[in-house]
Length: 239
Image (cartoon, rainbow, N blue to C red):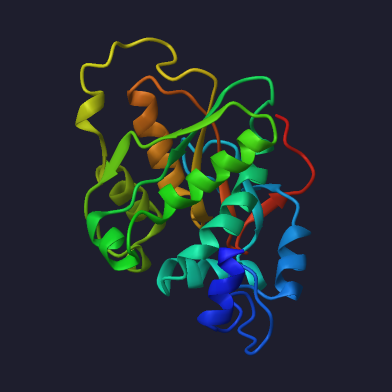
C-alpha cells in the first residue's frame, strides 16, 4: 500500500519501459511486471569461463524491462525496486539451493565510492529482500557480507585477463573473520554468491576463489541478469 501511495504522490516513468502516466507498482507498469514474472532462471556461463567460476544461474537476459529496472535501481536511486528485484533474485537462488538445507547468500561487495554514489549497498538490499522471499517459501535462509572491496580500475578499459586480476586483487576478507576457527564449512548449508549482473564472470570467479581461501565452499552464483554475450543452457541445473 505504501508503495502504491508513493507512486501516486511521486509519479515517475515505468522503470522497465519508460512509459509515463500509467499506474505503477513499486515503480513498474503492469506490462513490465507481467514480463518479469514470466522469467525462468537458467544456467549461464561466459565462453570461455574464467578459472574458478562456480555454477551460475541468471533470472533473465540483460535487456528489456529487467535491464531498465536494474539501471533505475542502481543508477537513478529508485530503491523501492529492491523488493521486486530481490524477489526475482530469490528464484535464481532457489534453483541452486535444496529446500531442506540452510542457504546462506554472500553478496558481491561494492567499493565505498560506489556505495556513496548509489545511496548505500545495493546488493545488500537485494539480498535482504531475496532472503525474505526464500523464508516465506520455506527455506532456512540468511545473508552475510564476509568480503570488502577496495577501489579498482574501470573494467571497461581492461582486457579479460586484466579484469580477472583487478577483481581478485581488490577483494579482502573482513577483519572480523580473521582468526575464525578454520574448518571445512564455517557457515553451514549451501553458500550462494549473489550479484546483479554477470558479464565476463571475472568478479564472480574472484569472489569464489577468495571465499575458498577462508574455507567457504561456494555452491554456485545467482544473478539477476546475464549479458547476451553468453553461452546458456536453459532448463538444466544439474552437473
